[in-house]
Image (cartoon, rainbow, N blue to C red; front, top):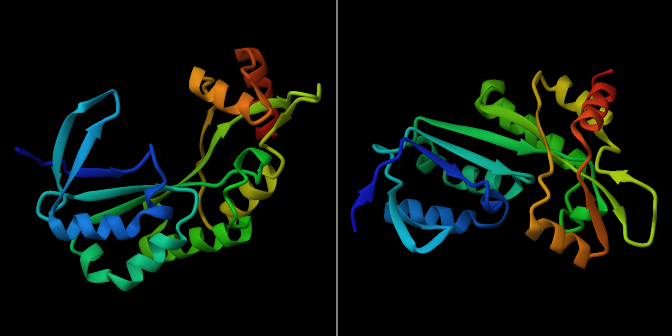
Length: 203
């Protein structure tokens, strides 16, 4: 199979690999490549080089960098063989929608501070996404995952980050079905309402 050489490895928007699969990552780095399946065509597989001479930068996406940091400290020589590492760190308000995220906000702030100290603030992006508006099936009260927004912004700003990446949830059919199966109804406010929400957040 032909080896694809990509200067940037994005790891990964689809799955929180830094939180759950770092042993797998190290294994693939040592092998020198990873086979990537096209999610829209399972028969299409690309073999991507992970050799340091082919990869200039890793982009790591996660809501919890605990396992990544532990793996990095054990394998610094491997990580430092690459020119750069960039971090997309999502820190949202704790929510009943994400009960599987057990780590506290304070621990995530500590991780953020560690990444900034180790790699510099230019290597870290703070994400608050997606913003999601919803209600429970048996309730009329409109809810969101913005409860701790101001507190999160204050803590992140104090660490030297001045920008935030955000998005509103896109209610795909799969997302809608999954949420409804768990007793939640996702809502997609009109653009005017989204602008109102953003204006309040920026006050």
